[in-house]
Length: 122
Image 1 (cartoon, rainbow, N blue to C red):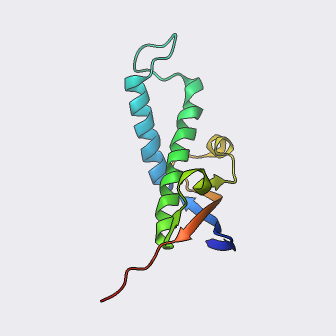
Image 2: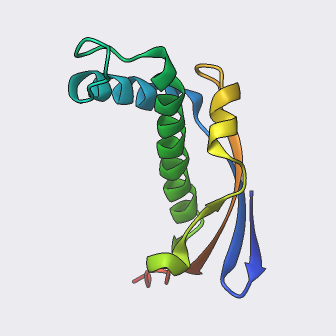
Image 3: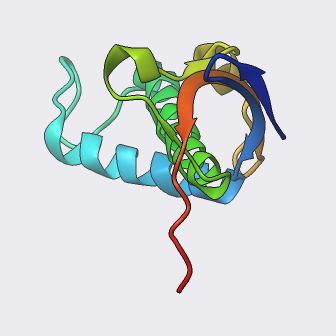
């Protein structure tokens, strides 16, 4: 659901897909096991204390990806630079703590944007 708040501001409530979050989390874990080194752990091992950070990063990525899709689906684009920052109202860290693998995540966001010009039909 999206609402135009006037003055170029928009309010949005949407759900990030649980399967997409799961795929992104698995990708983050694969990348971290290849690249990151944690003191006291063998290369390729991710310590339990780092798992919540991996989930948080995957959730942030999934929310960003779903926002891009829904904003363009409404024929909008965010403003460039800091003016177009998207503000997710929920704390992603809190969502990550309660997230169950495969479940969708409902979030609310506001952003400044503009309506894309419609292509002229011939």
